[in-house]
Length: 395
Image 1 (cartoon, rainbow, N blue to C red):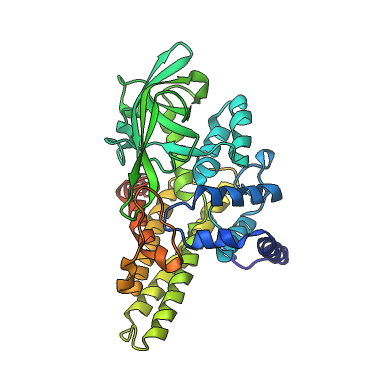
Image 2 (cartoon, rainbow, N blue to C red):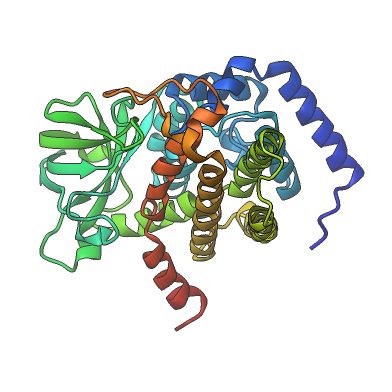
């Protein structure tokens, strides 16, 4: 694989850098740096999304007919890296990078016209209804029931760990439409408006003090059959397709590179305060190991991006990315906490809402705590290993 950029790609890199210098507001950079949650605040993400939409750069992963850029894999790689280096936030992926590919692949023309423009311009803000109190890693055991009555489904049950449900206006859900067949065969994929009568959203406050996840209750909620994606009882196939994009549809290496650079600055400050810091070299050794693993992740992401850019989906290799990304990011989080030491106890939690982090240092421990969940969401690490064994290694 040739990782050297061409003259045209270097020119594109300069174009991206100039755009970021001219259009990325400082308050968005600060809000991103001080964020300790999985996603940045909704208002920050949507403001940056609107800026990118105006430029035509919001969804490089989408086909050009829906607003994509028709960039090469190298251009997508450059854009992602430059954004992270400039301190730009990751756009909220739930609608843009998870639901949208499913609608494009399996939705009707009417659904594409109805939802894709509104996902792109931020009019619709989505959350994901997959996990349930009794169905997490074993997602196929979900029990949220949808009984068909004429042109509607009547939905009863609940979803849990629903990120940003308290901020969203729509939720895409996996529902049980046939309880008589094997679990994977009786699931459908529904799009639901969160202001529908019978829906209640209850907050779950994380141990980092953030309100990011929720439990969503459905009590005789009426959903039009027209809101179903694809065929009834075929939702499991669509769900797996979506999860491949959740696990391996973007560049995590750039985000981790940004966090690793912050860690190095933290180490420099520690050295300045205490010349004997890391006298044994143990921390320097760990940083070197992280650098090596990060380079391997970058190369793997480039290879998979080439496949996706050719019109495919990430495939089971996305599970390799999921495992590698989570392990690496958690290692950076853990080492950052180690370097921070006892000063990390000051997190400034605010019950019932998200804390305002005064600076990057104040977000280190919350980021560490929140990212422990990455071992589970999007499919647990154990599930990913099973997928790799079966679909990649043929065991």
